[in-house]
Amino acid sequence: MRSSVLEGHILCRNDHNTSSDSINSYFDGYINASTTLQLFVKQYEMAVESRYEKEVKADYDMINTAPVLKTPSHMGKLAAGVYTRRLFMKFQEELVETLSFLGTKVEEEGTITRFQVAKFGKSHRTYLVEFDICQMKATCNCLLFQFSGLLCRHILTVFRWQMFVLYHLFIF
Image (cartoon, rainbow, N blue to C red; front, side, top):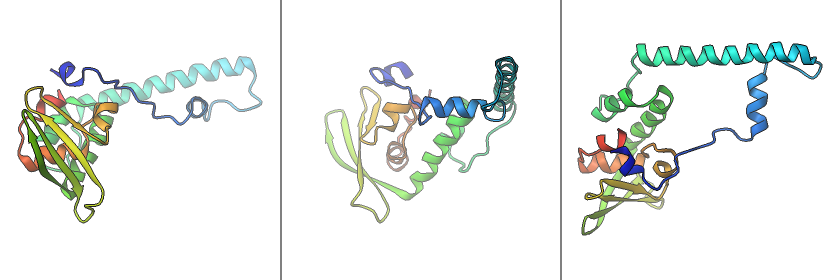
């Protein structure tokens, strides 16, 4: 079902500022300006092994420990079982933020319903969320979901305030 929801969207994201930043941080603590080629090769192997061990530990922790839920919501429990720990933490941030947002239905046109979402007390900065019941597709003009595949606080606000039980289709 996820493929129909995400069809036509590029879901990749570069979290690094520049490629040299990520290379530098990868080798931090392993090499410096006076490192010889022979020592570089050994240090490179150690850096790769260390990175691998960190990934194995993260995988183990994800499989064997439950993430801490900040809210008792059903959405959070569902997401915890589907997302990686890192993505879940980002999702949970978005979910917690919905508590300070209000969604209002502004227009209904056929199968599409539009909502205006704003933070309490900040109605000058609003987001437009469109929900198409037939295509089971929600979009927001903040574009977080379109760029990262993670539901934004604005879409989650609409689901929470309008009592949609359809959010599980977007998580899976």
